[in-house]
Amino acid sequence: MRLSRYFLPVLKETPSEAQIVSHRYMLRAGMIKQNAAGIYSWLPLGFKVLRKLENIVHEEQMRAGHIPMLMPTLQSADLWKESGRYDAYGPEMLRIKDRQDRDMLYGPTNEEMITDIFRSHVGSYKDLPMTLYHIQWKFRDEMRPRFGVMRGREFFMKDGYNFDLTKEDALHAYNRHLVSYLRTYERMGLQAIPMRADSGPIGGDDTHEFLVLAETGESEVFYDSAVTDLRFGDREIDYDSHEECAGVMQEFTTKYARTDETHDEALFNEVPEERRRVARGIEVGQIFYFGTKYSEAMGATVQGPDGKVVPVHMGSHGIGVSRLLGAIIEASHDDKGIIWPEGVTPFHCGIVNLKQGDEEADAACEALYDSLTALGLDPLYDDRKERAGGKFATMDLIGLPWRITVGPRGLKNGVVELTSRRTGESEEMPPEQAIEKIA
Ligand code: ATP
Ligand code: MG
Ligand code: MG
Ligand code: MG
Image 1 (tube, rainbow, N blue to C red):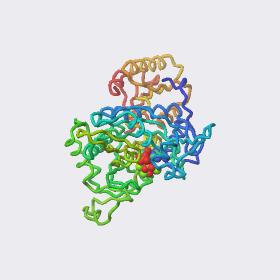
Image 2: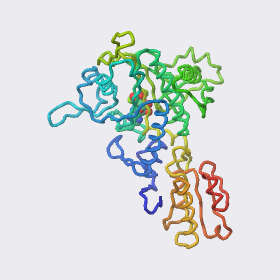
Image 3: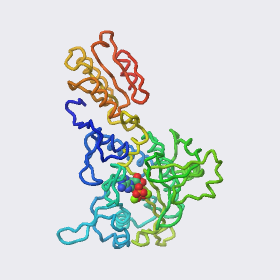
Image 4: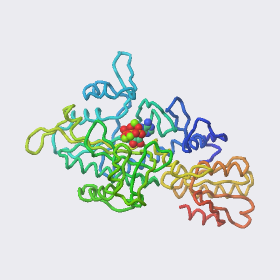
């Protein structure tokens, strides 16, 4: 992409409404624009990162054997009246009437709809296990929308639902989701720690939240610092193996890590004192086993191998895709701007032409641009007639991992400058070598 032809409305001033760094940088880097409290347009740069996160989520869900689909944002209230949640959900649900005076709502989540789809089409245990998911906009009329996309009212969420014959199978689905989530967050360059959380009115203790540690997080968390040493890494896993998935679950959830809702002071005190941590975290996902709550209320049953008709065991599993943008920036930035992890960066590198209009410099930039593009990389070429200082500031703000700086002086010696956004280190080298380093 050539910057002269792109739409990147960078702000010079820090917007006063933004209280935390991710919100400030997302506004300043021209990634989002607020339309109403907690409702945003995703401008091209923000949209590009959102799509990258969405793709990672899809890839990891499909790798785990989960099936993508798409349900609508607007729902009829009927199913919610059937499950009993239409009244229970309260003012967080945006209720709408259509022209026929029918009760509609903008979905805050999809348990009812997916259960209805399931009961309409599945009747035998032979179709199980099954996990369906979608990535779709949700609406929750939050009391205090704030921090930009971190607590929006309209937000983008992956929600998946497993249907299983037995509790044991459903707990395997739960473990499988935990593994797939660990992989997902690590690919985004994030450490998200599974912590035992509160299951709320649903009951039982089979729920974990995934938290990214950050001072600006809204949750208070208590953990054994040893959990921060755990990495899933690139190990191979058989998602169908109950033992393997249970092993990972065991490894990642045995050490003390809880949100304030389930925090147990006595248990916490058993952690060696020098490893006890009290901190704040951002909830970027949650997994849930809730048994037959919805299947019983809504008649989602299958015929088992013995001919008996039984309600299916279910769970639901969510990732806050749009919130993740904020969480990644909270975890990865400096005082000049964002520092994107390689896996989610909107462009692979920036090309800064120090003297736009200089024949040699222009030609060298074009050649770099073509070579990088031919390699399947996605460069952002700042080809505007601007001062070098302004170009550098924009590149630092939008946080691409690499910057190649091209100017007449370097070209005389056959070199360009390659700068790492993360370390700030610069090195002069021939253009071909810079390409090699990035690729
Ligand atoms: P929170 O405790 O932050 O209100 P939640 O527990 O109500 O979140 P879930 O129902 O578990 O949310 O939804 C799954 C995921 O969706 C959350 O883990 C979070 O990452 C994301 N999410 C929830 N509410 C919002 C919101 N208002 N804005 C952006 N993302 C959200
Ligand atoms: Mg909430
Ligand atoms: Mg929560
Ligand atoms: Mg939650």
